[in-house]
Image (cartoon, rainbow over all chains, first blue to last red; front, side, top):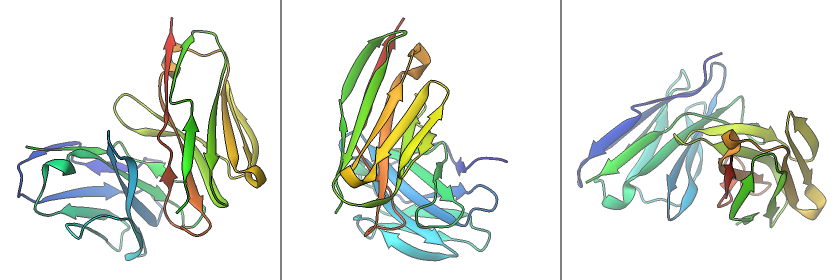
Length: 113
Length: 110
């Protein structure tokens, strides 16, 4: 069974631009979560989706948004990029939600210049 | 919210040595996972262990939920074990999200 896939793997943007990252979960998984990893803040939860509904959201500004499609694929969007948004963005999927093992994709490394 | 503390922050071992990594958490949890982050950034699942003991080859883990800690044991370490090990929990009051510790950075020297 294929793992979680994320595209693109690397991205370079400039301040003020917006970016969209994509995540395809493991087949059969309906929960998708997003995390940001930076050297200063570590791994932080962004949001979680299940059946196209956002069920939890981390403490990030409104510039960070996401959505989930009917096939469980998910996208996250960051508008008006700031230098501090440079990070590794990781997507995880699980079979259902609440106490299920989560499996992570390879991540998208975003650099904001 | 729930706090997750990992120790030690850094660990240097000679190949063949054994080690124990610790994860303390501040509240009751429904889910606890151990991950190894490879040099390319991907988080590799090691254990899903909200309670009890599990073993997988040279690795084993124990979670004592009532005392709010988990231990990851690495025996006969190899250079390929190098990397960062993370503990992550899903609290009973924070469903649908994992809270990560700051990790233990392990270096195994040949």
